[in-house]
Image 1 (cartoon, rainbow, N blue to C red):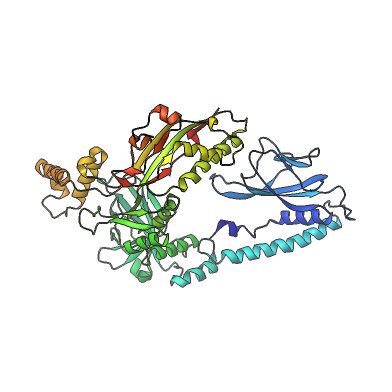
Image 2: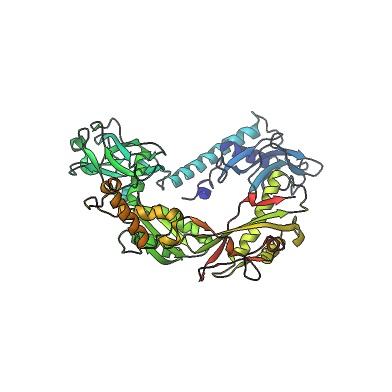
Length: 550
């Protein structure tokens, strides 16, 4: 479902009435104007006597998405008669940068015989009647559109949508209760998410249940209660079980040691809500054969990437990974990597940690821009982002094994069409940081931080019935020594992680030696994509705070 198309047909009643009134008196309706945060004045295409209204998009509270907004006259904007333009007022609400806002305004020479648009006038009464019908049609179309999607359908429409998955709304004939999930103290104290739709059962499988809502076991929290409802096969009296009966997870969740219900389940007092039905439908989609290793590999191939290595618990060393984890190494353009990573996260099974890695060399230039014209804070931020975009376009054009060069980065900025930066002398590199992805290395070469991982791998791979099980290891110094020796002496390569390994040697002067401060400040440096003799790919990793203006 696309947020742009959801709001495409959404038009409030008052906006429609304003448009009709403006048109009836000969004004201009919804003139589109492109907003640039660097500009304050926006001329209108025709002579105007006054502005009726302005609508557009503003940034949502999350700072990423946009929402529809009606701007207020004399608060957000004013009409500059001298320039025949919209003037945005400092401190007022402004449109989202590089979005389009729409202006309704009156013309001094409209020639329309209708002039009275006050409340109670014939013109306004007719406009409001027509506007009401148009607004109703918009809402009906919008409601019909939303009724076709799991995320937005409600009531009977939602039941029809999920019926294609052979799912029906659970009535109050299905037992409900609370199941407590306990943290495994040996895994760590990070946050653990229990997804909605997680399947549980009694010890012998007489009754099955699913979680109704998503719950998160926060850092430092020992346990969390999760509401559950009986599954289809346990409708009615079958789903009524005593306290302590629900003890089995259908699929292990990393960090959860055990589950139980402290109270008996009972028949529900109400039918399943829309949110619960929606969550159950999504869980069914996730569990319909998608979350297998083959499905993860399919996602990678569909995104146009090449799968080069796989680490999973069922493989033999050195390509094995700890239980509940899988690592996929791909070869793809950096701009595609995040999309693939997001798709992997949506496809992976609940409780399985999927890590995606690639042979990338990340570099972060620290830059000072001099002789920059005075700009507003928003204008400064936009300028900085334009500089980063110009560098990003240059880096995106580099292939595997091709270095990023300082003088070419400067040239990309100067030729990027940024009117505030037009000379090489305005750009000064003060530092360049570099790191590379943690692909894999023998234990002996990665003792810092990785030895712990190696020991945990050995321990978790040891069955509890083994003489070297966790209890014996912790209580027997000899057994602990054997585990440490096995982890170090085997020198087995560890699975890749999402960590980055700082490596200043990748920033080199033109001679191939490590770049000096003079090399960096004079733009005579390059970021090498060669790691251990292998060709990798350079990736720009910058934030606005990496650029200073003077």
